[in-house]
Image 1 (tube, rainbow over the protein chains, first blue to last red):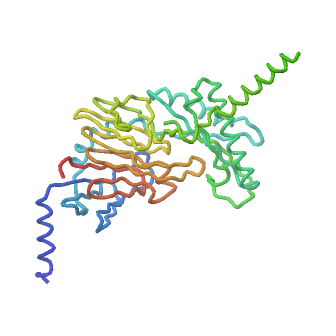
Image 2: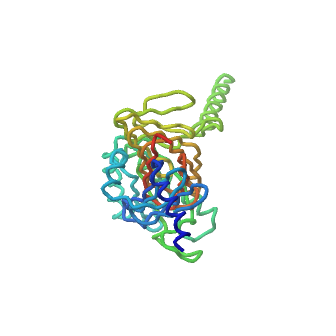
Image 3: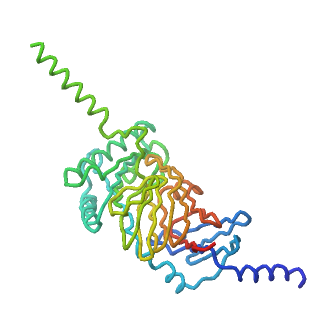
Length: 196
Length: 156
């Protein structure tokens, strides 16, 4: 048994003597989302990292999981993280049923978009429309795009740069609340504004 | 009378041309894939063999290479809301990028040649598992979700 482990140990020691070529680390998610995960493929092995601060390195072309202290990780990536711009922020708007008017809560969310933009040296805005499942795919695709265009026009009227705004429609293909087909649901009738 | 008719026709034609060309990028014109959002110290963009200083607000295109000096840093956001930020002495090539904002599907390959890079992934990694990759000289990183960091050492 011991004879079998010797080559493995010896090759590990040999690799440890080679300089590190690359380091890969899963960082904790910024906005409390699910745990992130990456895979590292060196052509022979695939290492999966799926916990915060899980790390792998390559030496002599071979990758393997390693322990790297949080202290070292924060020193190594301090400048890269300091260079991070303000992350994209998403705002969700709902409409009063059968009306192009925003609900009162959504009117204050709409105003928050302008506060967010003020914090950024430059901005781009993406407006995406969504519908519920009432009606067919094509109808909802057109409707979602029309909703996005209407919000874009309002943003421009309120002083934002038209060139910085892009619009898209997702129709009924991306429900916030899963429902059966042909189901009216005000929570799915929405527009999402992403500021980045 | 005939003159006025001609004028009206010319106006209509001009309007038609304006409508036909407004906001529709021609097929030959590449569309931007990212925007520079933050720059510290020395940072440059290499585009078709030309080096230009990285400036906040400038757009980036597929095949651009971003590079930072020994005191530099750069932060960019892609059109799928992926965020890259690189520390000093880094070189990253934006090799491949496709994204459809209507169905959120796409693919992305960045070539991390040297330095440090922190990433918050966006819509491509979320909607198309396996479609976002970061290549390094020794291994390929596949992205399943959100936040990670890579360091590639200069000597190999």
